[in-house]
Length: 483
Image (cartoon, rainbow, N blue to C red; front, side, top):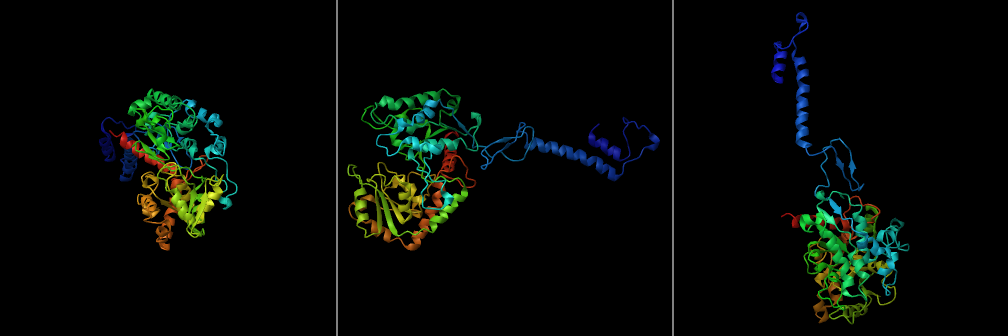
């Protein structure tokens, strides 16, 4: 007999034939109150069963809790929770590469140190790749544990250490939306750039893609969901010939490598290279340090209209540095020039940051390539960057810098400057005080987006350069693999 029929008959005082009462003379018919008490738990039981079926069907005995503050996943066997998996679509799998592709590269750190380097690369490996701490920064004790003499080539080590603490890592590659390849491409190449033939420069990259191609993770999407990081510019990995005199390796020209997205400090013409900021000297351990540094910069006195830290490039065809230096020195004390041809002048972070903090505008012409680390040092100092080529920033850091570049920078055509159509003084003096203040505020607001937090700690609410790079790579790979 169906349950609802049984209940209705019982509550109406008409027990069924199949139910025998032990004491017919003492039988009592249920009241309306008793009927409700009996019926309600039954209905509630069936409602809970339906709710469980609809909302928890896919949870197989575990509930996952994720959080930026913990950086870990906690498992509670057999318990159910309504919290949605916050890592859905954000899981990343890290390839466990043979050590020859990363750890062994930096193990003998003298091999990645050039004879012309002012400091040993062994020092740069300190503090998880951040380099030696800076003790003499002229600022508050609030930041004394967050400033380091960071080498730009250490981005591969810094990024790898940040990836190890990423919130949504998984050991199950089938769950992963992206696959990180912790290959120290730039540091490996640095060992063989000078005095070695092309086969020595190329062998590591060739071995890497051969190793990757054998893995099931690669076969799922032919490597299109893989990404890596380089502390060198993309051009260094695109050597087109086998002449010993030609620069770099052929790593990014290998067919398999072309499917991998490379995050790099400067991109080229390839659609599979994406630019991310150079590492700066500031690696905050918490949100408070970032906010306090921003407030500190808003109160800075800036006696110089503009400044330039660099050297002439007399042997570099088309360089406008000589013209910039001449105009700076002839500016009647409007410009502060730091000559980087002098030993250690520009290698001292304290000197460099002091120069930029005392200036309204900071000149950023191309150097050995279109981009400069100095661009990010100037932003970190609250100094408005002045560019002379769109490839120095505007076409590069699309995940980190605003599309409307007029909000945070000034552009001066290098061609117009060279032929005398414009001067730096004229251009910058035309920017009103109100415009300066608005642009400086935009620059200061950019600081969280261009710094890499200390890998040994965690920012709570701020998305730094690493976070934005990961967000960008996940969106990019989703588009590449959607078909």
